[in-house]
Structures are given as structure tokens and as C-alpha cells.
Image (cartoon, rainbow, N blue to C red; front, top):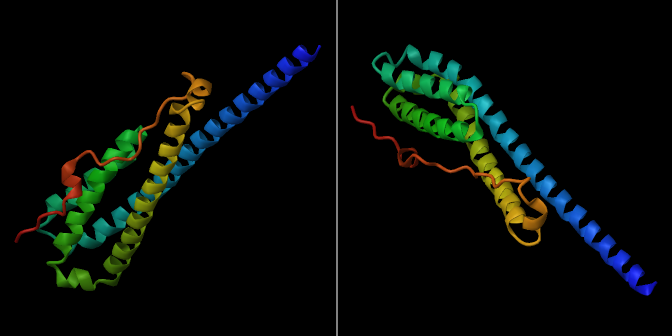
Length: 183
């Protein structure tokens, strides 16, 4: 009778540990989803600001049509991206295009003095900072989740139900470099 009781206690302890580890993995998985949704919301905010910026800049930068088209195309790529990975890549290209736009805008003193442009630039800079923070948060969540499913005993509980996630990485080396502007 004592052996059966000990086995029941061990089975109950294993069951509780399994449920606890599984719940921890599910929680970490949900945090990753939430962190991605935060990035997505900030990307949408940035996409909503860009048409106003482009319209404000058009009148001043008639000779910079390629720059404006690059921003518009990059914005469309972010909006049309279907997966987080595609959205990450398109977002990096949009960040680069906006950086180039702001660098080119330095050559137009009337544009820099325009209050609407200044406010949009401030709003976009603020949003870029929020995106950067959200990306770091997302990467932290992904790291915690991946550690939970790849280390013992989480890897046993996770089995094949939970797949590793990809953190936010900048794959295009040109995105890491400041744009070159020449006149």
C-alpha cells in the first residue's frame, strides 16, 4: 500500500510539473505574440504618418522624385507583407528610405522650417524609437521562449508542438549603414 501511495505522489508531482512547464511555455509563446503585435501597431502608426510626410515634402523636393518613390514603395511593402519575417525585412528597408529622405531634406531650408514637416519628422522619430524598443522587447521574448522549449525539461514538454521563433534581425547590411547623400 505504501508503494502505491509513493507512486501516486510521484505521478502527481510529475503531472503538476508537466502542466506547470507547459503553462510556462504557452505564456512565453503568448508574450511573443503580444510583443509582435506591439511592433505591428507601431509599424502601422509609421505607415499612417508617411503619406502626410510625402505630401508635405513633394512641393519642396521636386528633384527628389526617386527618394519619394522609394519611401512610398517601402511603405507599400510593409503594408503588404504577410509574415512577420517579411514585415521585418520590409520595415528595415522603410527605415533606410526614411533615413535617406530626412538626409536629403537637410538641403531644403524652407522644408526644414515647415512646421508640418517638423511635426511629422518628430512624430516619425518618436515612432522609430518605439519600434526600436518594441523590437528589443520582442527579441527578449523570443529568446526566453526559445530557451524554454530548447532546454531540459521544457524540450520534453514542448515536443513538436512548439517551434522555435525567429527574433528580429536586420539581414540587409545596407540598412545598418547611414545613407550617402551627395549634391
